Length: 201
Image (cartoon, rainbow, N blue to C red; front, side):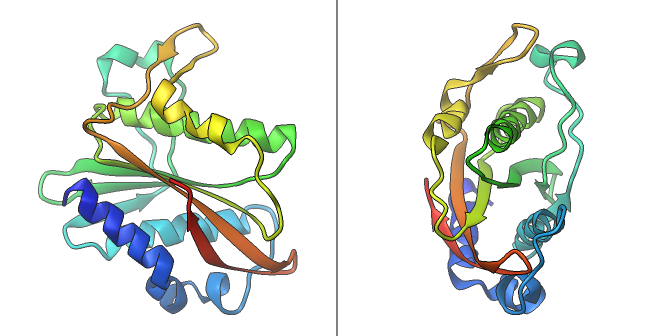
């Protein structure tokens, strides 16, 4: 399972919604209440389920990552737990890390979005810096125009600096690619459906 196969499987599912319609009707058909972490829980489990439909892949939700890359040892990183981590069954090699996060035009939401992207980059390095693919999905209400999203996405390429001053570099683009999607929620806070998944990158 190479990164092009992973990319194709994800893009095709977000476009067709076959898994979404059959297993997550609260997202695509009946609607879901925007309460606490309900939308987040449904979204991350949907992404995990996509991985389980790919032959040779095992996918786990909310999987803590033990920092195995000694370059970034325990003392310089924070604990990260990506929303979804996919492994190749043949050798249990990680092939994808993913986050599903709400986007809002408030400082708190911007800070959370940046933290999630930073966590994906930390997970990437802690898993050996050779993952084929990183998937980041941010969701927002229909009509909401995400601002400054590009500067956060650039973290994948440019890296970032931890509070302790340690610089965490971006991905090795010769080895790893990343997919960015915006999931657009339609309806009201009491009843949302998410059937528009737009590829941003």
